[in-house]
Image (tube, rainbow over all chains, first blue to last red; front, side, top):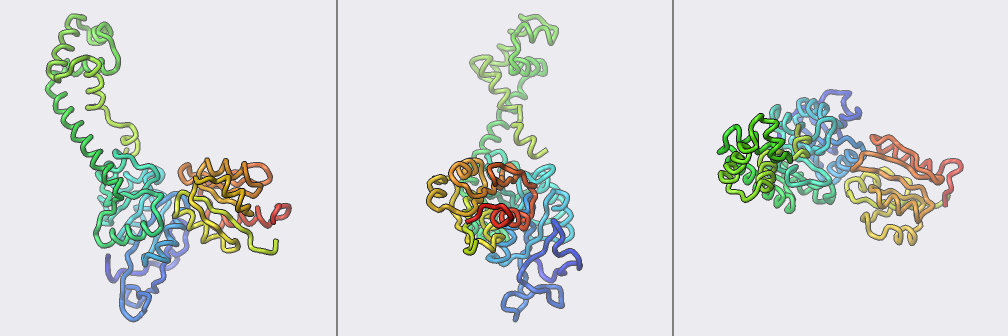
Length: 262
Length: 115
């Protein structure tokens, strides 16, 4: 929470994608008076970034009415970054699918540019997405189907420095971390292979038969068989099918995550 | 229509339900959790208009109710209004006031079949 911030330049209020609302009136020193009006109370500022005006309006009305927050809005990543630089909010509530490049991109750029705590939310979070958001710099992750009271509680907690993460999402993140650790371990085992063995394994994982591998690498089928035996021995795997699955799990990133955080 | 129209809001996203309620100041809004026997609920309630936020409820609402149905596709970022037997697309980035106006037009506009 910041103290003594300027209310903001005139002409901004009510502009599309840049709305300021709140019950507190600006005071002479640049802070805002609380509801009682007799002592200076700063209100946490939340920047709500979502493409849909109806979602932004819902959050804005709720936080204004029940949360004691000041709210600004953004509809795109670009607007979010501009508003964050201009208004220096305490919190950003960011849609995972914020156009054009997604909430993770926005959070990553935001983390580089400011100390604003970003909370990402989405309708269908997966373990990988939650982990990707946290890795990008998110301070928390929420379901978009969260109750109104739940959202207010989560953001109040975030304003106090807590990291809002619903119970099921915490489990998801732990699951994703374990998956990541397993992938890291598998990558370490793949590193034991020679360059040629890795080339063979990559082709095998892609479904190539020994004859195909031999043709692509310009080596004999006998040599391919020997490479495959070495690969299975080094990776302690029973079959080439298992090796193919292992390689895909170890090396190939999940496309959904890559696409979303690209 | 002399009484306030009844608008049934069936949303899986409480934040959206709250926003819709706030914008329909002219109506008596009844909010319900989405996806729980929508057909039975609407057959009993017989609202003057329906607001939904998912495909299943949109389909059920159109099947069971003659009232206008506003479908706010929060996941798909789409918006459409069912009236006079057909869906008409709305801009997904419609402001709350535009949503209110569309529903008001469906309820009170010339030729609208209100209560």
